[in-house]
Amino acid sequence: MELSPEERRKIYEEEKARIEAREQILKEKQRISPDNTMGLAPNVAGLLCYLGFWVTGIIFLVLEQKNNWIRFHAAQSIVVFGALFLADLLLGWIPIVGPVFLAVFGLTGFILWIVLMVKAYNGERYKLPMVGDIAERIVGVPGATPDYQPPVPPLAIAAPVAAPPEKPPGKTEAPPAATAPAIDEKISRKVDEFFQKRRTGRITSSAFAIAWSVVLLVFFNFFNQYFGYYGADTSGNIITWTRYTFFTWDIDLWLPVLNTTLAITIVGHFILIVYDRYLLRRVVLLITATLGLATVVTLLAIFPFDFSVIPYENAQIGTEIGARVLLVCIGVGFGITILVRLVMLLVDIGRGTAHFK
Image (tube, rainbow, N blue to C red):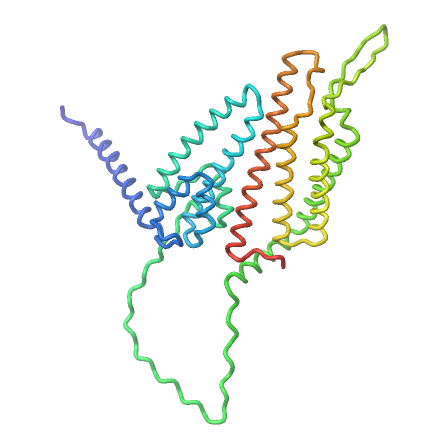
């Protein structure tokens, strides 16, 4: 059967698009800079960033200082599999639905593991939604764009060099100009300048953190009994409200952990308001986030709640599951925050751009 001109053109366009796509992939592979600290082929290093999940991601992010394409994949591996790892740890505290979420997260992690390794080995520019943006901020440059090897200019024919003019007697040569500051010092100065421009916003953020910590401190220590179920009893025309608190006496085991975390948070942010420095803020925020995660995990372990005071059984079960899910989400949020801030701090230290000045 003979093909019509329209069918021939359609087949031609499809084949042309397929060949062009293949050539583009090959070009991208060739354009990835082979220059890297580890001495590996970039696509192999990219695969290894995902092979050991977030562990190899941290290794390559810390050791690799030249190739931003490899560093991006290392950072993306840390964020993706670090978050999944923390979620798996915290989901174990949730009854009934916890194992279901564990299975879903496990399958998702396995699929992402295979896909990301294949994409990195093929040298493709692949960035996960949202996660890739976080990885780019960690690396400090658009990580999905590989390092390109600059073209080597053709060798120019050396022109004869004229002899320098003779110095007239009695005249001294001017001293050479001062050398430009090192690149790291320039980066550090620019970071500090940028940091100083946003001081007002940082002071507001620290003030809000202090105020919120004080509110939590007062509520959980003096008014936690008001967190409960309120039942109404009607006798004639009189309505009597009865309060059934959700907290058990086990809350006394958790309060010292909470009070320590909130006290350190208040002191830390007060120091940041008075003595605002780039690295100091990074360290304080990392410490407070770590303490926050420890507080949430301790609350999940003790779980000083009694929802049996709710008169409906389904409401009791739903409230308990909802409370555990909420605490797990808060814990995962703290975990991701810790991971991102720790990696950014290590990157700054590795580059020599982190200091207290």
